[in-house]
Image (tube, rainbow, N blue to C red; front, top):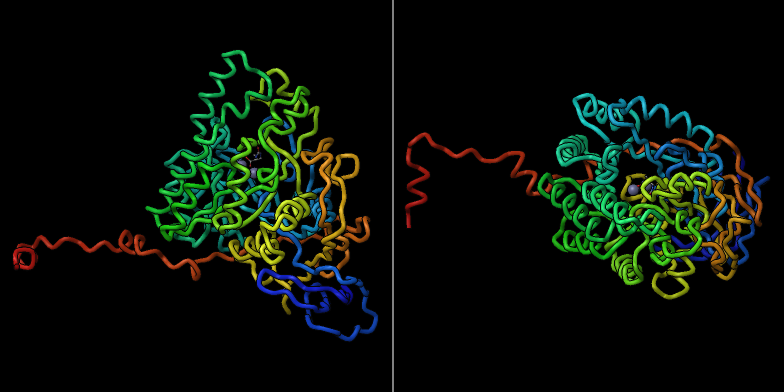
Length: 493
Ligand code: URQ
Ligand code: ZN
Ligand code: ZN
């Protein structure tokens, strides 16, 4: 890896804004400051007064996911390349074992798939079943493989859904390990029942999907997961918080001092449920994801949640299925593979609808698209910062540049774009990954296999046991020896 200098930009981090140059060498940032001397032989990127920010980190993607009888069309090379084209330099994907599949086996399988990645990546590992071997594998993954987060799907009954017993067992095990529990919060039993009732009423098209997953279904599961985490004394991270009901559960918990983090998807911030009423079933089917798109009032609330700090991260849940794949559910919405794309557009969508409208400052933009994820998943300041010693993952951001989003021009491996036709202002002109230019002036320069697996150490030293855990962990035994000491103290005035 050579030396590169990004000159003439304004460096914006989650904490600071300053006119500064950035020098990268051997994949790391080695100097940040005004008017730095150009190192001999360095590649020069002229920022020309644009902003220089940490590369985006997407904490929620599913490259080449086997799901609902098919496999997501985006793989780790095309997906991380499309990410780079949009200013994202790292994703945290998911290892999702089938029920009864050993977690270590699934982990090794996904690690093999990800070797083709063009940019850095890491994995949350899902707990989709339970026995002692799952507990043991969680220990191995956290101790030896840099996994500090375990995912739980409360939806997808008869597939990867966790019941409460598994949630309680896994959360307790995560507490021992100092790992973070994350949840997909929808009540899978209610979804299953509502799907059946809606289908039996004769609603078979994609419009049936949101009807089977109303906000109450997400709100109930969000609150249940939060309460289970509270009683067990573990921190919790809710993925794709999509509605007021779930946001209220998060807000209540956070205001009471419970350590709950929550993520919002870029698409849930700007797209509403009218897409399911599109006369073209393909458009409606392409928007079938879970949780579904919601009525407009939920988008406004989610923006307020992001502004208020109740939602800390933005993601995409990038899980692509092309039209022929979505057609599996043409006559039965329950068979439409759930998922949408968006890894290439998240940064510009959040800038356009968040910063240009005054909802977010540029520093808050960096926090919610990169730094907060790095901090929550314990890879800051290596990631999500512009500081000496950090990985050289950076973007040159033109706040006035604009583009119109379209499947015709995007780099994602899917024949549809949920933001089709949206013109956004705020685009990356250069993306740097590990100190190498991977995107510049509209051309990808990604290299298959250049991406690295990023270890994420556990948190035990950060998340001190809460008071409740101490009470639970060391309850004081009642003295019934009969010496009366207790009674005297109880009876004394
Ligand atoms: O539920 C998820 O996060 C995965 C299976 C992607 N699909 C989706 O609809 N969100
Ligand atoms: Zn999910
Ligand atoms: Zn997901």
